[in-house]
Image 1 (tube, rainbow, N blue to C red):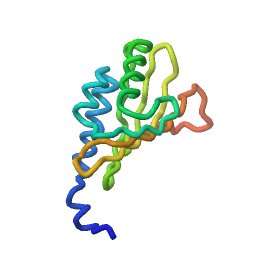
Image 2 (image 1 turned 135 degrees about the vertical axis):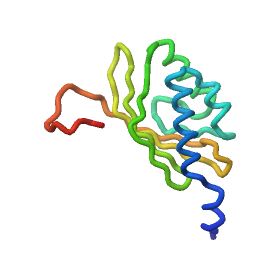
Image 3 (image 1 turned 30 degrees about the horizontal axis):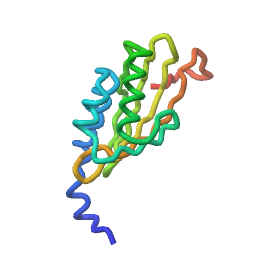
Image 4 (image 1 turned 30 degrees about the vertical axis):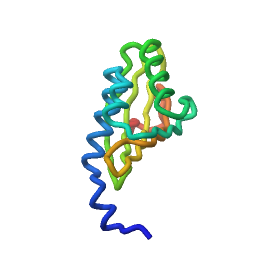
Length: 136
Protein backbone atom coordinates (compact mmCIF):
# COMPACT_ATOMS: atom_id res chain seq x y z
CA UNK A 1 0.00 0.00 0.00
CA UNK A 2 1.29 3.47 -0.89
CA UNK A 3 1.74 5.93 1.94
CA UNK A 4 0.10 9.01 0.40
CA UNK A 5 1.46 11.32 3.08
CA UNK A 6 5.04 10.21 2.37
CA UNK A 7 4.53 10.39 -1.42
CA UNK A 8 3.03 13.87 -1.19
CA UNK A 9 6.16 15.11 0.59
CA UNK A 10 8.47 13.93 -2.23
CA UNK A 11 6.41 15.55 -5.00
CA UNK A 12 6.38 19.26 -5.57
CA UNK A 13 3.90 20.12 -8.34
CA UNK A 14 4.97 23.78 -8.58
CA UNK A 15 8.64 22.83 -8.97
CA UNK A 16 7.66 20.17 -11.52
CA UNK A 17 5.71 22.81 -13.46
CA UNK A 18 8.74 25.10 -13.60
CA UNK A 19 10.93 22.18 -14.72
CA UNK A 20 8.49 21.16 -17.49
CA UNK A 21 8.39 24.72 -18.82
CA UNK A 22 12.19 25.06 -18.70
CA UNK A 23 12.65 21.66 -20.37
CA UNK A 24 10.22 22.42 -23.18
CA UNK A 25 11.65 25.90 -23.77
CA UNK A 26 15.24 24.62 -23.90
CA UNK A 27 14.33 21.71 -26.16
CA UNK A 28 11.88 23.44 -28.51
CA UNK A 29 12.51 27.19 -28.54
CA UNK A 30 16.25 27.17 -27.88
CA UNK A 31 16.75 24.06 -30.06
CA UNK A 32 18.94 22.30 -27.47
CA UNK A 33 17.31 18.87 -26.95
CA UNK A 34 20.50 17.23 -25.64
CA UNK A 35 20.99 19.93 -22.99
CA UNK A 36 17.30 19.68 -22.05
CA UNK A 37 17.61 15.93 -21.48
CA UNK A 38 20.80 16.28 -19.48
CA UNK A 39 19.30 18.93 -17.21
CA UNK A 40 15.73 17.73 -16.71
CA UNK A 41 15.23 14.06 -17.64
CA UNK A 42 15.65 11.01 -15.43
CA UNK A 43 17.30 7.68 -16.16
CA UNK A 44 14.64 6.72 -18.72
CA UNK A 45 12.46 8.68 -21.12
CA UNK A 46 9.26 6.91 -22.15
CA UNK A 47 7.68 8.42 -25.25
CA UNK A 48 4.03 8.03 -26.27
CA UNK A 49 4.05 10.31 -29.35
CA UNK A 50 3.73 7.91 -32.32
CA UNK A 51 6.07 10.08 -34.44
CA UNK A 52 9.00 9.83 -32.01
CA UNK A 53 10.73 6.59 -31.06
CA UNK A 54 11.16 5.67 -27.40
CA UNK A 55 14.20 6.74 -25.41
CA UNK A 56 16.63 9.60 -25.07
CA UNK A 57 18.66 9.05 -28.25
CA UNK A 58 15.51 9.02 -30.38
CA UNK A 59 14.28 12.21 -28.72
CA UNK A 60 17.56 14.00 -29.51
CA UNK A 61 17.60 12.76 -33.11
CA UNK A 62 13.99 13.81 -33.70
CA UNK A 63 14.32 17.33 -32.30
CA UNK A 64 17.71 17.98 -33.90
CA UNK A 65 16.11 17.02 -37.22
CA UNK A 66 13.09 19.27 -36.52
CA UNK A 67 15.49 22.16 -35.80
CA UNK A 68 17.13 21.66 -39.21
CA UNK A 69 13.86 21.22 -41.08
CA UNK A 70 11.92 24.00 -39.31
CA UNK A 71 14.33 26.74 -38.27
CA UNK A 72 12.55 29.35 -36.19
CA UNK A 73 9.96 26.94 -34.78
CA UNK A 74 8.53 28.23 -31.52
CA UNK A 75 6.16 27.26 -28.78
CA UNK A 76 4.10 29.68 -26.70
CA UNK A 77 2.86 28.41 -23.36
CA UNK A 78 -0.79 29.21 -22.71
CA UNK A 79 -1.32 27.29 -19.46
CA UNK A 80 0.55 24.95 -17.15
CA UNK A 81 -1.24 22.68 -14.68
CA UNK A 82 0.52 20.48 -12.14
CA UNK A 83 -0.88 17.77 -9.92
CA UNK A 84 1.11 15.13 -8.08
CA UNK A 85 3.85 13.91 -10.38
CA UNK A 86 2.22 15.09 -13.62
CA UNK A 87 2.39 18.41 -15.46
CA UNK A 88 0.12 19.40 -18.34
CA UNK A 89 1.15 22.18 -20.72
CA UNK A 90 -1.28 23.80 -23.13
CA UNK A 91 0.76 25.25 -25.98
CA UNK A 92 0.65 27.04 -29.31
CA UNK A 93 3.28 25.53 -31.62
CA UNK A 94 4.39 27.47 -34.69
CA UNK A 95 6.27 25.53 -37.37
CA UNK A 96 7.47 27.96 -40.12
CA UNK A 97 6.45 26.79 -43.57
CA UNK A 98 4.03 24.27 -42.07
CA UNK A 99 1.00 24.13 -39.82
CA UNK A 100 0.45 25.75 -36.45
CA UNK A 101 -0.86 23.56 -33.65
CA UNK A 102 -2.80 23.78 -30.44
CA UNK A 103 -1.17 21.17 -28.25
CA UNK A 104 -1.41 19.46 -24.92
CA UNK A 105 1.78 17.90 -23.51
CA UNK A 106 1.72 15.74 -20.41
CA UNK A 107 4.88 14.93 -18.47
CA UNK A 108 5.32 12.43 -15.64
CA UNK A 109 8.05 13.06 -13.07
CA UNK A 110 9.96 10.62 -10.89
CA UNK A 111 10.46 11.20 -7.16
CA UNK A 112 13.71 13.07 -7.89
CA UNK A 113 11.90 15.76 -9.88
CA UNK A 114 13.06 14.44 -13.26
CA UNK A 115 10.88 13.96 -16.34
CA UNK A 116 10.53 10.28 -17.23
CA UNK A 117 7.46 10.04 -19.49
CA UNK A 118 5.68 12.13 -22.15
CA UNK A 119 2.31 12.11 -23.92
CA UNK A 120 0.91 14.71 -26.31
CA UNK A 121 -2.00 15.53 -28.57
CA UNK A 122 -1.90 18.12 -31.34
CA UNK A 123 -4.67 19.86 -33.24
CA UNK A 124 -3.95 21.72 -36.46
CA UNK A 125 -5.07 25.34 -36.21
CA UNK A 126 -7.27 25.92 -39.24
CA UNK A 127 -8.69 29.15 -40.54
CA UNK A 128 -12.30 28.22 -39.87
CA UNK A 129 -14.32 27.83 -36.72
CA UNK A 130 -18.02 27.50 -36.02
CA UNK A 131 -17.56 29.71 -32.93
CA UNK A 132 -15.60 32.84 -32.03
CA UNK A 133 -14.01 31.41 -28.86
CA UNK A 134 -10.59 30.57 -30.33
CA UNK A 135 -8.36 27.69 -29.31
CA UNK A 136 -6.58 29.57 -26.54
